[in-house]
Image (cartoon, rainbow over all chains, first blue to last red; front, side, top):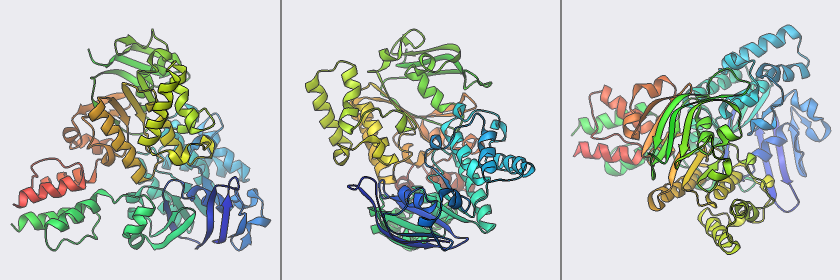
Length: 274
Length: 280
């Protein structure tokens, strides 16, 4: 679906954001991209929908070189949601914001209304449909930006930091929605620092540092590598920290468990067996 | 008479129908570290804006009640009167970065308050050092990544040497290690320098351990207010969708299963230590 071949990109000729990135993402994959601040994650996904074109190397979307495609063509295939919702919201109501992207892709009007309503509902925005995005909170605006792209049902969905400003419940809802879109065969790519979100929901992780990919594979193996954790400036989630501490105190504690339930069982074994 | 006092304060933004804050009464004393949390849209950002007088001086709307900061009524004093008292870090760092490079950004606040140039120079160096911004010194804020912008916004707020730091999700764009570093600095300034902290955050696993107090908001009102270890074990956290630290979830689940740890853990390490106490 998406192939990058030795992609280089520099914003001003001095500061190099991507230094030779090659990757392949197949149709229907669910992929997380992690990396430290300034690693080049946002620059990378802007190449997925043609907002940026490689200065060296090639990007292929469904076999076509993006150098020969317009942003309009690519955006029918790849929907991108920015990190900062204020970069994409500009209309006077949430409904209009979502309708705009559907209209610009040429959906018939009855389908526009239906898709708009379903998406607003699923993202917990139904009550806010007529409000101006600029009167909403940061977390709510973020969801409006998501809605405007999710509604169009692109084959590839690339989201830059979608969990920012979201409370626990909204995060679960978002994950459910991404899953559902993925089950329909869509490719979902998420840039995030949220390691628990990735461990819970994403089978594949691409780790970036300093403009390069430093690891790419199953999430559990990529994120159990101390070197990756350090270079990507991540921290282990609380439950991993807890089992690591417990395994130093007690014999027979496996450090691979990550869920609350696993830890509860482990603790019951420890204190029950005293 | 606390350092910050909300007296039955309500606010509704111009052009909206619902109250963003609904009769909030709240006193925050000098030296406290208060974490504000709650579902998105519950009024957290509005509360922050009310502390440095952006509400009602900049954002217009319906107002009821009063907010006093260091004894000054925010209805009667302009934003500039609070500038050196309350340092504010906004949710979206781009909205507050105004100059062409980091040094100018850090000098901007103190210059406008008439701080001596020698002192400004000293502060800039101190803060660049404290927040590890050396590599960004000459960079234009709009060429920075979201996370870098956020560190600069924090630095600019601290360059005013505020008595109160109000920070609205100040680490949301940061990678976890950078977030941890910033939060360590905030905790240090709170504990060692007595800076009062009001911090909005969803990710309580990061901040609960530093806080002296957690305030839970829902629909423009304060629903729970107390020490983190008391607030986070309450059922209401789950009911309104607040993500409590996983260590607290384990604590609660263990009670269900008949095991009561001698304290409420807020971190993975605390959890392990408490289990060790019980096992011995």
